[in-house]
Amino acid sequence: MASLTTHILDTANGAPAADVTIQIVKINGEKRITLRTLKTNSDGRTDSPVLTGDQFIPGVYEMVFNVGDYFRNRATSPDSSMFLDLIPVRFTITSEDDHYHVPLLVTPWSYSTYRGN
Image 1 (cartoon, helix red, strand yellow):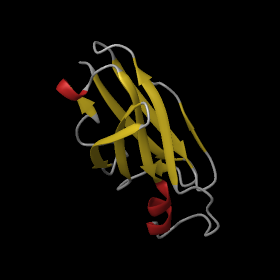
Image 2: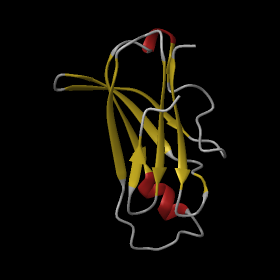
Image 3: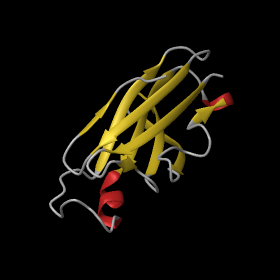
Image 4: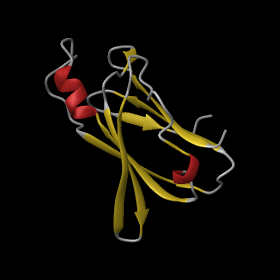
């Protein structure tokens, strides 16, 4: 099914990142349109696809992951000297027939992402 999904893994604590706020923004030149705001569940995923149906169209998008609040709210945060707050990941959807998956591997000081499946 054509859709956009995500999964956030807290690699500093070896756990899925639950309760992370994610904004999905459509980029059109200088114009930014927030389409949805979601939160991850206990598995570090959203309960529904980030985009699907009529909202899933080719174009430039940005997912903004609020990892600062996530790490500040963790009772067992590895260190209070975190570096990251909001992580914007900008990408292009070129086909409305494909599935796009944008995982985020994150610590308070670093992150990586890729196009998963």
